[in-house]
Image 1 (spheres, rainbow, N blue to C red):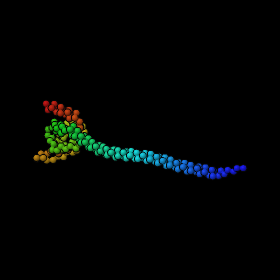
Image 2 (image 1 turned 45 degrees about the horizontal axis):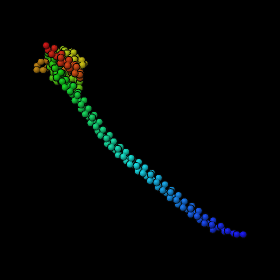
Image 3 (image 1 turned 90 degrees about the vertical axis):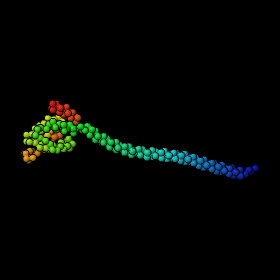
Image 4 (image 1 turned 135 degrees about the vertical axis):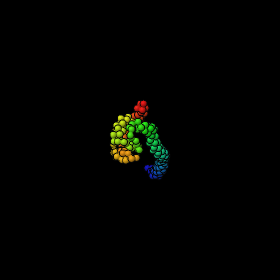
Length: 197
C-alpha cells in the first residue's frame, strides 16, 4: 500500500492562507485608514468651511452693530432737530403775538388807567399799573374779558391806594390768559381798527 504524506501540502496551504489573511488584513487596514483619512479630511473641510461662514457672519454682525450705533446716534440727532424745529415753529407761530397783545391792550385800556409792567409767563400775562379808581380797574377787566385775544378768565390780584404825584391813585395787579392760536389774534387785529373808527 502506498502512503502519501499530505502534511507538507496542507502546511503550505495553511501558510498560503495565512499570507492571504495577513495581506487581506493589511489591505483592510489600509482601506480603513484611507476611508478614515478621507472622512476626516471631508469633516475638516466642512468644519473649516463652517468656521469661515461663522467668521463672515460675526463680521457682518459687527458691521450691523456699528450701523445700529450710528442709527441710534442719528435718531438722537433727529430728536434734537425735531425739538429745535418744534421750538422754532412755536416761536414762528407766536412771533406776532406780542404785537397783537400790545395792540389789544392799547385798545382795551380805559381812560385814567396806565400800565407800568407787562409780564408774560407762557400764556399768563401779568399786568401792573395805576388807575384813578377801582371802577376803572373793573372796566379794564371787563374790556379784557370781552377781547377775543384773551381766554376771558381775568384774575384780580389786588389794588392798593397810593399817593402818586400828590394825587390819589390805585396801584393794581391783574392776570389775563392769552389764547395761543392765530385765529383770535387775527380777529383782534381785524376788530381793533373797527373800534378805533
